[in-house]
Image (cartoon, rainbow, N blue to C red):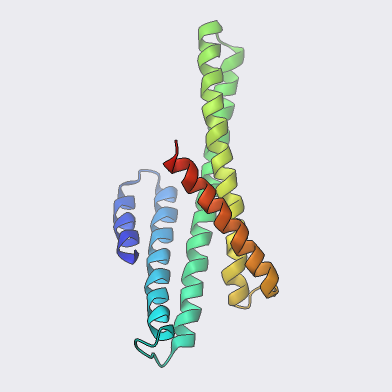
Length: 168
């Protein structure tokens, strides 16, 4: 899995929008770091190999995880703003168009609304997910029950998103 994220970071160099490129590469590299360290932590926990500084590896893994989520969240905020600008442009065209153009604009607005909804949902999921490593790193002081509930909610959100993708 870390290799996939490194490959995705390489592919992201082709993104034309420089800010989106930065966010995407940052997210992919952070997740590659997180998953690499998570694998080391797994090996230690399974007893396959005992590492001397496992607590440090765990801290670094949480920092990489948080960084990946933050890059994703910033990407979502940026994407949301782009969608809002596109929406305003299309909506402006509604008032200065004939019926055929208005019909096309309405169809386009529906697609924009659908895209905006998915971006907002991802922002919510990322916002909640940030709380988990932030608590593990001591940046926040949430109890284990709250962290568990947040993890459950975001897992369900992610599963629902995957379900929709697979069952289109």
